[in-house]
Amino acid sequence: MRPSLFVALALVTLPRHAHGDSTVNITVLGARVHLGDVVPGLASDVASTDLGPAPASTGTRVVTRAEIEQALHAHGIDGSTTLPAAVRVHRKLRALDAAELSRIVTGALGEKLPRGAVLAGVRASHVSVPDGWTEVRCELPHPPHKAGPFASAANVTFFDGGQALWTLSVPVDLTLTAEAETYDVPRGSHVTFVIRRGLVEVSSSGTVTIDTDIGGVAPVVVAPSGRSLPARMEDARTAVMVESP
Image (cartoon, rainbow, N blue to C red; front, side):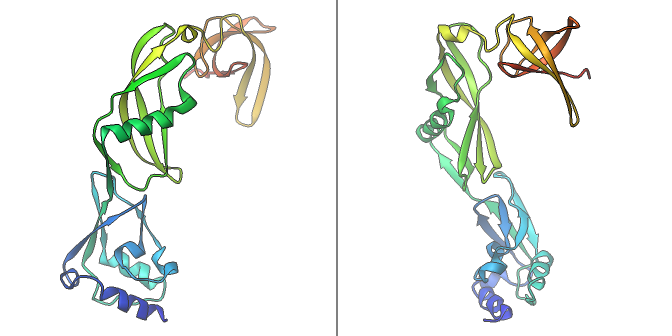
């Protein structure tokens, strides 16, 4: 079937009041708006044409007739004057009750809890997030090195194919055991001290002078010079020098 016939059939599926100078409202699923979202019934290769990002969950985005016509013309299709003046795109949302969000956060945290931390509870509430997410990741700030109950907040990010759709903060309660009192890198640990500048990397041995954690910055005494330089702990055995601002 010729592309022009495809679009002719597609356009008759639009409500009569959508043609001419009116604006059509549609809801999309996912992070991108495609030509097939605004003109239904197109062949798959035409419908998959990317028209740009979908709006945030709290906003809308207007796709003008000129933008639609330009995308159709790129496929040799004449949209004529039967297209609406514009299409207002809304993001499809999914409502999550407190129990469902709590299950999502609990599952996403999984083995990501800091050493010695036990998840005691998730204080979730009812929220609406963009639908179409395929993965949820949770991050927790490092808790204090002290046993006992600790109230924290998980940063919960919903992803679609690696693209972040929405992030929210969810309060969580942790129980910190005696294991939480220890540090990833105790004072006196011997590490590889690394200086990185562009593609050049120079390393030497060094000694960490304070208790710290992976990701933390601590002074490292570098051998054989004996100089103390700030470094970020990349892992328990590698410290990368932090450049002065």
